[in-house]
Amino acid sequence: MTLSHLVTTQAAANVEVGRSTRPARLSAVAMLAVAAVLAALPYLVFSTVTDTLINLFVLVALASMWNLLAGFGGLVSVGQQAYLGIGAYSLVALADLGVQPYLAVPLAALTCAVFALPTSWLAFRLRGDYFAVGTWVIAEVYRLLVVRVDSLGGASGKGLTGLSGLDQTLRGALTYWVALALALATVGGCYLLLRGRLGLSLMAVRDEETAAASAGIDVRRAKLLVYLVSAAGCGAAGGVITLGSLSVNPDSIFSVQWSAYMIFIVVIGGIGTIEGPLLGAVIFFALQQLLADFGSWYLVLLGVVGIAAALWLPRGLWGVARGLSLFPIGYLVRPSRTEGP
Image 1 (cartoon, rainbow, N blue to C red):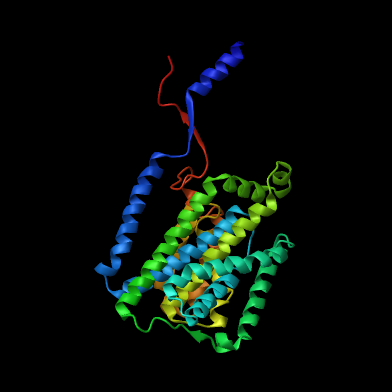
Image 2 (cartoon, rainbow, N blue to C red):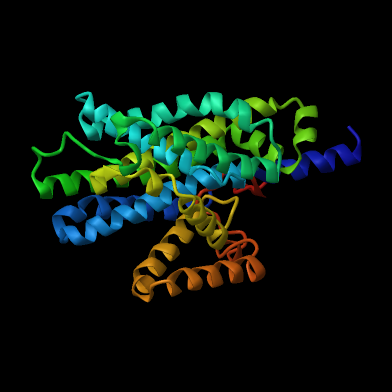
């Protein structure tokens, strides 16, 4: 054995490779405690508080799905409102067929994944800016198609049936719990998805698609899977929005404003991280509550905040905390806890 080989072997013996960190373990305990408190809120606070928090949970889910698509997959979409609308209308249609609306939320997500499959064949023919604009056009096409279906209410929209027999307080609590479950499922799903081989494949595709393909990565399969997951998550969010409003309107649910919200949240929070959309959603939600009475100035101030974040914090607010990861998805090399002889 040569001296260099001996030194290399000894160095390897003094380090260990892992994913878990002390901050991550502590944050996991803290987040479980927060989730438990949030789940108990309908018993602790007035319904006005829980009704407001439903909006926050929807924003977390939407931002996490857009970040998965663009931040990790490199697919910058401005048309995810297409699946928001399809999910909302799927919920209404299923309720008309006799399906309990709360049970129809996962079915609405599945419907969006089914619609996303043929849509991806068209969208993936586009690259870069053309992909972003193309997804917006696709969303508008879906809106126009829905408007032409009289059974879905046409241009005036349609009300949600199947909840009239529920007590209003119980209905509010059930909607809150479904929204909370959606937020937890999207964040947890992104974490589990990115910890596997797909996560490494997605980031390789995002950084350099040609190099990823030459390394043996099935680029189309990776992009398709993340596109379907994002569509399903947005569809479930559309279903939750409909549960909260008890009706759906095509101009509102298919509005590009939803994509603007997703992009804003991810940009200020930190794109390409799991924590960024969570932080961004909380900040955006707080700004909504604080600036809601300012009329049109509300949108102006949001724009100023977004521009400032893009100019001075390109990595987002979470990027300021360099090295801190509450959801570790990569591998860390650190000194071994056991000393050598």
